[in-house]
Image (cartoon, rainbow over the protein chains, first blue to last red):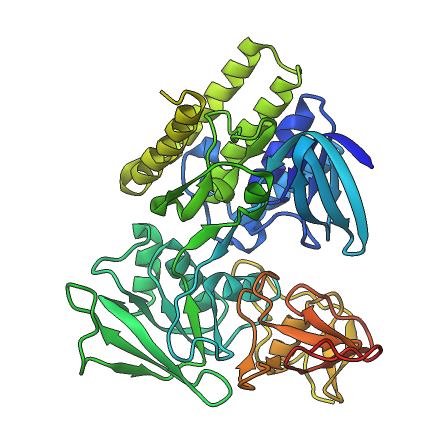
Length: 368
Length: 116
């Protein structure tokens, strides 16, 4: 059995930030990630991030990823790659399959779960044809593997993922036939939306994909207009000759391990579905099990990193590395930055939803 | 053998990421056909660069499946690799001489019968 002070599950922006914060205080940390390289989805984010200077605004995700990896290395944090965490038992005992081959038990004093999220799908006739894929999958192929998924792409969904990946597909030399949005209004940030707009990509609001056509792969797609009640209007079909259909219809937290551990959950649509309840220190209803990043509700890499720091600070503080005063000061700095990220028309909803999670957690502690 | 590194699907120049660096080439065998791949890249990326989009056919309806999530979660891109079925090709790197087969249904183990 392997023993560690802190086990971090997931080596993306939240997990690495948590590990760095904990290691800075002097704690022994192990980061486990099922992928063959760390960084999570940061290395496919080739666009510049938002926020203030403190949030590394204006820096590309890929460069933030490099910085996190450098710091991880400098602090001597142990990172286990190709390592899948299959279960969390009581007493914080993890069942881990290391290097895809070896079964290992890991006993941790504290666990930080930063397992991220998975893309949602929508289902329509032909959606299983090769050529229909998640927008994030297309992004992985163009920006990391440097292979284009197709020549002409139809994007379903105009949220940030939809518009950012559309723009990156253009940068990769693909053609984006159109962006289809079921809602009457576009869903992404103005800056990213405007970039695709300027590039001449047409948007179809109040439209959805009706079917994908093709023998052995996608050859075309049919879209249809929706009325005020979101019902298709017959006769409004449009056909696009495309070889790829990308689905960008949101994400769902990957919270299986929190379920296995026995955490209490709440269904919050604005955060992407069921999310584990946690307090404002990121501790779940299981003592010593902390969460950070998309697993606690879909946001962005910037807020995931801040939540990671918050979890990191609190785990080491609970192990006695910081006094209450130090912990409060450090936490408040992070909370202020988190608040700044959760402002504006997009951030406000996330802020109230996150507060809902923290309130629900409090109610469990004090049932009256 | 096809000249696959020169595939049209490879993004050789990129305004932000720069030029694609030359990597060592390896050979893989896909359904008996020799193909070129770049060392260390994922099987799915190599196949896509070679113009292959169908990775397996489903058990009941024999309908084709390909890349879907690209991060090893959905298992749509599984193939039989070096005689082992159900390998997630989007997160498994190529190796020189690797034998890759389109998977039919649940796939068959070469030794010890099938897992159907």
